[in-house]
Amino acid sequence: MACYLGIDAGTQSMKGVLIDPERNLVSAPVAVHFGKDLPQYRSPDGFLPGDDPVVRHADPVMWAAALDMLLAGMQAAGLPLDEVEGISGSGQQHGTVYLNEDFSGVLPELSPHKTLAGQLEKVFSRKTSPIWMDVSTGRECRILREKFGSDFLRHMTGSDATERFSMPQIMKFAAEEPEKYRRTAVIHLVSSFLCSLLTGASAPIDTGDGAGMNLLDLHTLSWSAEIVDTVPGLAEKLPACVPSDTVAGRLSGYFGKYGLRPGIPVTVWSGDNPCSLIGCGGYAPGSAVISLGTSDTFFGSMRDISSEKFAYGHIFGNPAGGFMKLLCFANGSLTREAIRAKYGFSREDFENAIKNSVPCRYQMLPFLFPESTPPVSGGITGNFEESKISPAEFIRALTESQMLTMRYHAGYSISPERIRMTGGASASRQLRQLAADTFQVPVETGNFSEAPALGAAMRAANSCGNCSFAGLTEKFCAVTQRIEPETSAAAAYERALENFGILMKNNLR
Ligand code: XUL
Image 1 (cartoon, protein in one colour):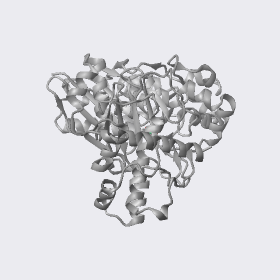
Image 2 (cartoon, protein in one colour):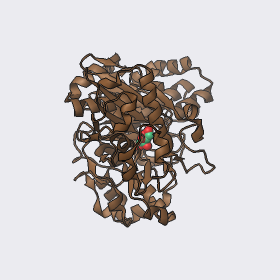
Image 3 (cartoon, helix red, strand yellow):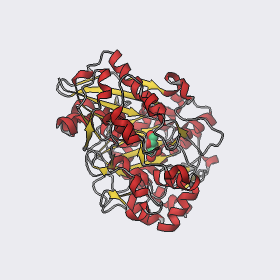
Image 4 (spheres, protein in one colour):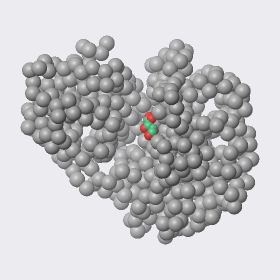
């Protein structure tokens, strides 16, 4: 039987799932938690603790150790690794791994009698990797904006200069540690680094994750020469950028010890958001995903980028072809929970407050804390006086406006026909109904918690096993609940959206 392996290298853990498209089977995930299972790397939350809150680095050797531990764990769990016909993976986006010239020599010679971590110790030109939580590159972002302008950067790379993105991180490293930068032969993303370990050779970066670097020309899908040239020598240090269904290479003999068959194809890895898009069943334009967590995320496959206004948010490659847009809203559950605590409401009170208040009466800019979409410092502004409305009405206005800001910023490039909802707060029936009513489309939930690993396995099945994304989505991304929009409220939500737009224009100049 043909199985496909998907590996998700997340911030706090590495997980693996196997799928068998013919028999319609998906394995329970096996996980390695960096903090608990690899305490020797002293990274309780997946990164090295430090005093400076804007600096967040992780030890790349830990990721290699986790790969060994994960595959050993999957073998010990009795999963049929010998039936795997293709592998791919998903990596936390934006993080960079800096390797010296020994890397390409060590990889093909990996001995199965030793560990990956032990054999890779000397291949790093920089001991630690800045990850997506690192926002220490304000200076480099300013340099990029001064040189190119935000509009150019957005249009060319899909994002304004962004602190956590790879290019500002590389610029900072080159400026602060020029000697180590000089000794760097190749700069990988977390995704392409781990893919390289599997193939035993330096692997390409896929366009899905590559678009999260502030370096990829979205119009030619190759590195932007103008931007690359900002850092001398960078062009020679970047792996090639290739479509997401490219087979990067064949599985290295090293991994035979886990029961995998050396020589099976390994598809280029991608970023966790592009893989989640696939794993949530959102590969085709028409589906969008809302993840309600500490911050809320809205992402979806785009119809095309030619009409895109390139305002806020980020454009990444869609592994199924074309592009996806991702918007992060910092004021997600962070704000919902702060307001719930302020009024001393239980979760049930909170649900009832939304349910029993009149829809679309009040709108606000729901940014209690500093927001990234749009980038503003915190502060709630509404078209009402807070003292004149009840706590329940305030909660309705807040949660409704959180949905309105998603619809407003999603713009026309993503006009979903259905929304898949995931994340902790998607357990709220009322929040799901609010999303359905605001977008006037059905909201679907299912078991999408392992979406990045599942999406990676589906990508392997697509690229190595010729399975269509349509068929894979039907099999592996089943919907368990669907909420229909209240169509009689459509006009009221259109007016609410207009009012929200007026608030935005009047208050955010
Ligand atoms: C997206 C982002 C995060 C990381 C880690 O731009 O920074 O979602 O991919 O999950």
